[in-house]
Image (cartoon, rainbow, N blue to C red):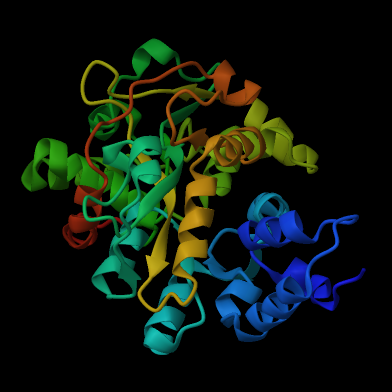
Length: 367
């Protein structure tokens, strides 16, 4: 005996599908009362139960996240509607949409932007034992407004044959006159550099950091321009001997289809600064539940999935980033660069110091 209501099962949440299939599996004849009750239930089920989904605004490009979202959908039955865009544009969109925003979850890069989203009032707190267990306290907001999903280190890259590793030591040492005309770094309006400077303010104080920034600017081989890949290309081309860049850019260049990128990356070596002290500067890409989330439970489930074993392993193997979750193996490329001590500061502090860092960089003449 067939049951017309079975045609609606794919639209139900997985837990509800299982319960109905238990009673309506082939070969088992349901009673008229069960059929009637089932039809009534399907008729009155609220829409969230009939169409589980989550709406995601992501500053990460589609190719870097879509495969992982597809896995999530396959495993949970929850559809992910993905909208990608630039970090600042997505934040502005959330602000303009307010509580009417369709977005349930925001994924963006750098703690500076995550902090701005929280300060703008477009996020809400999440309490999840799974998230708190998976993600170290330093890489999540103390009040639960954002959670780091991947870890990105910003070390010193040097040209093999022009610099010896023993000549390098700390970020602070880059202001030494011995590096005059030998350093490449992107502009001060880049949030990665703002967070790096914020970490120096936290460690050394504002006055010492401003002195350092002036010394660094004096040592630049050229006016800041381009992104992290451009700093690596410039160093490989002989314009400078050192570059400050996030490691995933170097990892991506090593396997890039363009020969010039592969060749440039092959000339560079990674140096982990401040290993005798606080450790190398690290940051995160992360996610936050939006203030107007309509699919709150599904969004939290996706957030937990991204912080779980499968999500973390995928990021480590595919994106050239470090897992935020301890114990997850890194890719062969990252492993070849060796282990490092990371700065243990709670990244929330870097967001709080972002404004001061921007002003300090401006005073130092960092263009």
